Amino acid sequence: AKVTVNIRDKTGRVVRTLLSGRPFDAGQHTVNWDGRDSQGVFVAPGIYTYEVSARTDEGKQVKLSGRLSLVEARALRPRGRPSFKDVPAKEWYAGYIAEAERRGLVKGYPDGTFKPSLPINRAEFATLVVRAAGLEREAERRKDQALGIVDEDMVPAWARGYIAMALSRKLRAKGRPIIGLKDGAFEPLHFVKRMEMASAIHRFIDRDTGREVSVSGAVSPGARVSINGRRVPIGSDGAFKCRLPLKPGVNVITVIVK
Image (tube, rainbow, N blue to C red):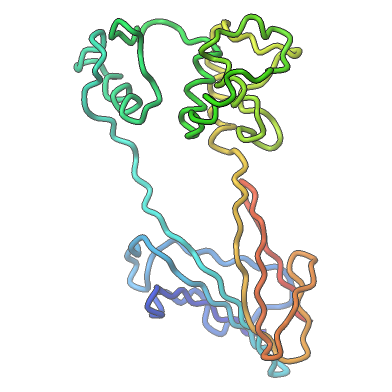
C-alpha cells in the first residue's frame, strides 16, 4: 500500500507531511513527529490532527485520523519568599518552599516556623503526597476511618485522614500504594529514607489516570476493521470510531483492515 501521513492544525491546514505516497508492505510500522512544521520550526501548543491514508494496489483506500494535544513543557522556576520566619530568602531552597506554601502543600508549625533542617517522617510525607494530589478535603472526611494497619495506634490524630488517603485506591500506581506498608505496618513516625522518597515520587508521577484515545477513520464498503484485536462497528458510509484506554508508558495501537 502507498501511505500518506499529514499533520493538520485546528484550521485544517497541513503543517507537516510526514509521508507522501510511500510504499509499505503489510505489517507494523511507526511514524514519528518531532513537533516541527514543514519549515523546521516548532509548532505552537494546541490541538492537532494526524491523518493516515493508505491506498492498496487494488485501489482500496483506508483513512485513519486522531487528535494530538501539544502542551508546552516549562521547567518550574520557584520564586518568592515563604512566610516562615526561619527560612531566609537567600537560601537556595527558599523558592521551593515558597512555591510549596503557595500551592498549599506545606503549612509549617504554629509558631510560624518551618524547621527546614528537621527530617521528615512517613506521616508527614503522606500528607505532602495527598495535598499534591488535591485530595486534602477527602482526607479530612476520612480522619475517623479505620486504617487496617498493625501499628494504627502509632498514627498521630492529625495524620489519620492523610494516611487513609495514601493507602486508598485513589493513590495507587499499577495497583500498588504510592507509599507502601512494611509487613502490614505504616511506620508513621519513622523517618523517610531518600530511596523511599524517590520511589514514592516516581510512583506518584506514574500513577494510573485512566486516559483514553480516540481512533477514527474510513474504509471501503464491505471492509472489516479490528483495533487491538477488537472488532469495530463500521457505518454504512465506511466510517468508524473507537475509544481505547491508555496506560502510563508506551502504547501501541494496531489497526487491521481486511
